[in-house]
Image (cartoon, rainbow, N blue to C red):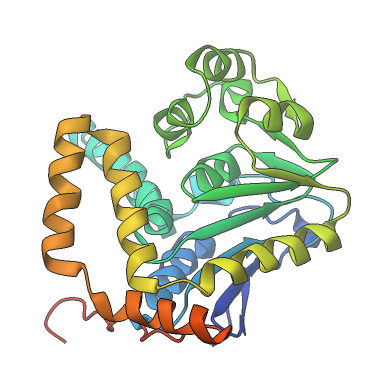
Length: 280
């Protein structure tokens, strides 16, 4: 399938999703917000992929929201004259945009973000919804919204404090300063720094390949458990994993692992079962 904002390629059990509008700094035009959840949900629902790599093209990863999102009816619809309905439409628009990144968090397989150059505004919202982040040495992050007179509202202020210390989040969000790749690594926002864009993409695909070699059911359970524990107490999270294991734990994958280790071979696992949305 052809997309305006993305290119999607399969590398074994890895799906590589690339932002492909590098000459336009990969700004998030209205079609971006439709295409990203369509792509990620389809990958997750189909179930054969083991990991998703989200990367970009051009000098910068993404310059954030394109102004056309605010000026067209594609996202928010035609403004209503009555104040209450205008406000309701604004709220619905924010929730719609948020859902475009929630799909990364809800995907049944890990999403690894490979970031080069600038990661600005809405791009920070996006990558904080990924499982892990990797960068080039020239990468930088900016909560740009404060610099244009608005509050970030698509996930940065909700997810970033769960990744790095709150005081650092507040400084970035209040000042609109840039955070360098080295500083992002020091505070735990990114996992690893690569020297060049080519090395970054190759390195992240290699990490994704290591993840893809594991039981997809165990990886899914791990992702669900980590996400749940982030937002709940230890007691609630222990109860959650006990219930998950009661329904999802399958010795078959463990036996495949043990047998592969005994023969010095790679284990083979069944794919995740496809998901059906709605009643189709």
